[in-house]
Amino acid sequence: MAPATTRAGATDSDAPLGNPGTLAPPTVPGDGAPGLLAIEPLIAFMDACVGDAGLVGPCHCAADRMEGNLTAIDLEVFEDRMSGALEFSPDLAAALVDCREAGPPAQWSDAQQQAYLNECSAGSDRLRSLCACSLARAQDVVPAHRLNHFMASTEVRPDIVDFINLCL
Image (cartoon, rainbow, N blue to C red):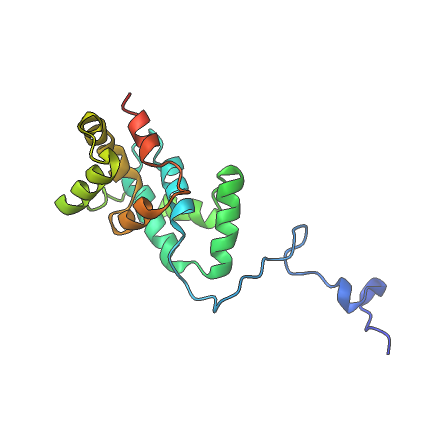
């Protein structure tokens, strides 16, 4: 049996994917339920978003909105865009506009600050003052509820060393 043809003689296999001019959407195993963004692209986004423009509150607000609504496929697309060229999707840009009046996020608890300082200084008294200096930037970029993920990752950029370098 020959494949069904549509107008202009195209077969079913030539049918558009619903996103003309682009590649087919990626397939990701899993149920597609919304979930947390991997820490690496989240921190890359936060660092790029916060920059030096004082957008800490709006960036955290946008990240919160984005994280709770992303499916596994959305996560893969977002990670590809962020790792490729730090491109913000139209949805993310819209979230930033919606969050433009957001206040600063909740500060890290004393225990979280201490955990960061301990991890950063790794027992070195010489590093302690640099780590204390880097704490402000780390709090701007790393959401409090994701601090443990940040400290556990060996692939995240910027990392603690990058935050320390801002203080040199």
